[in-house]
Image (cartoon, rainbow, N blue to C red; front, side):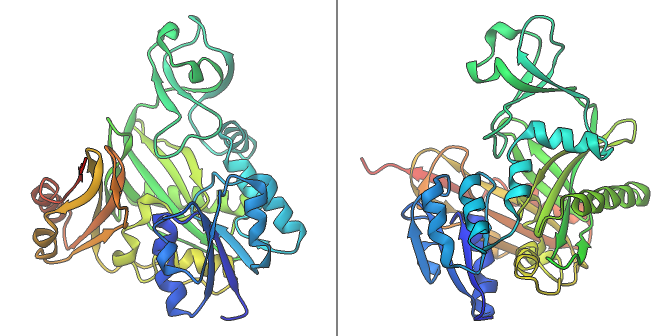
Length: 371
């Protein structure tokens, strides 16, 4: 493993959840992010800078492999690393496609991937039908997307020009499929994860794994995800978010070329987590077994208020059988910020949902002001 000097662009919670595997394998790890990122205490080499700045990204030129914990990285910096024979995974080509929602949609169209009807709108006016508007670049964790009711005059300025319009799907449920691929073309696909969303925060409220889908829907969803990965040729984990419509159709919504919030349960629920398989993929190692060991429900722990982070209810959660807490180490709490997650394991969905209802109002992170 010492032949690999792994670089990670971004030092947030996704990178943090990769690090236990790096430690287990005795990998040397460099991370680029702003000061006090949650990964800083745990890596061999922390480079203070911005993953959105080309020159800062080029600081990773001494790494043999560079990956990322988010897609909002400087594309020209990735290309410069590739020109210096650094193995960037996923590649600049993959990141360039996924950074732009219009290019994603055109990719779906080109390869006959079912998706919501869409069009590119140069200027929103009264003639545009209700649906969803998406800013082409920069949206992340539910940001950059807005429901459009036909009232163009009340839109925020960012959504009035050069946006992607999508028809509103009549959704039965939402799901995510994780596909892992290594540089030699080996692929493995996880079972679909069922996602329940918080409509106010536009974040995942909780996930169920494996999702409650028919064998036909499961098969079709996995085949779609594998087809997309085969065409994109990404390395590591690709999350494919989909809608299951009321009429039984599957529409692919968006892609994420990295470990994803919908796959956090895999740390406890599967033989090999998405984080380990992402690392195996980008390093060119054989992929791990994706079989699941237990049914799982995972939910985000969301910050309340502003100030120093204070956790409540930790003892109550850890006293529950089959309950696992992940604190992301964020010292400052903000309203709506993802501060951690918890995974519950059980034998039935009913048991998991009952446990979730019991604990979700107890485990909290509050911002405490000392001013």
